[in-house]
Length: 446
Image (cartoon, rainbow, N blue to C red; front, side):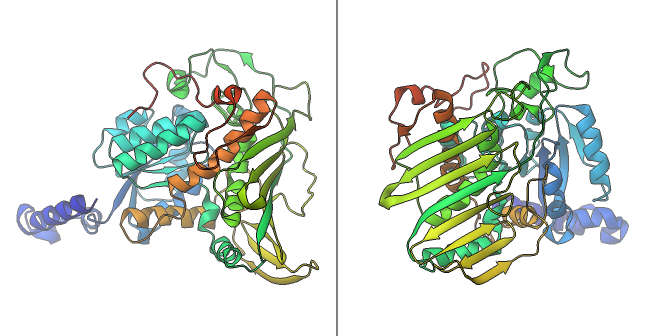
């Protein structure tokens, strides 16, 4: 980026001074503004225009961030049209529309890609982007399986690009503050964390094979996944629950966030043992193919534990809120979520709290708000060399492994031991799920 900025800066000055008849006065204000600051402007594309992309627009649209949205990308025309309409209300220019991200990656003016596709596209898409010289804001989950965890980190190291994982609570000032305090002993030895999530998701239609929507590029939607017939209505969020080709169930979908905070607070890496109790316990006869309820246990060195308590379709709240992380220590405890934290002593008395009063939290589809904006701005400023990533992909990938372990334990119906240094599983049956099958030509390889 530095060389590119210097080059653009020098050529811009030359153009203004020599190559434009009449100099600056002959230029329109709009064209001049496009040149002014272009040495620092970041050109971005958004891939995936479902429920999440809107969370990036405030950071992209804010003039002080000096970002230009060059492309909107989605495999369905109606998504492109809806996004174009929404974006037109936020910015004064029209981004180009493109179905195939590979064409966008050929544009050397694009600096970075926001990736908000279904899960099976995340690592392959991010790797393609890095290989093409782009920085990546990679939504959670950063990988579809453990092998991809290793792959996306390896690509980042090889191509030395800025890769921010989209677990935006890492950019919360309150979370940063309390985790630092926990590490400094504010609750003594932090030994246990309970990460939790409750939601009232309803019935899901049984998948029925039909022709794909006429404006959907079903080939591109499948991308890295093995080819199969289209079922109604897999493209619209139900890919989360219709088998393992595209989604990572609720662990990848939401547990990623709270398990990351738990691991961060306890200052642990990979566990030594993982097991789960999970099943489909609501709407038994509908089309949902994964568990909708899961309790997962992770045992770490130094007698530390993380528990996951997730209920996708029973919204009863056991912890007074629908998501968060409860951290126990030898001298107190902390409840932390996207709105801030509460610090308690051993008697359970509240001794301190710090609430953000922000507008991002809960379980509403799509989300977005102040934390997502902070996270995106941190991404931009890291690209410029002014900040350090709050969720570097190498760190995020370790947290992501906790979700993959739980999914594997559920699928083989047993717990297993893990190498706490490397993250590898000491179980042949589990290791058979370490990697997935790719459509020919789509597996990212160095």
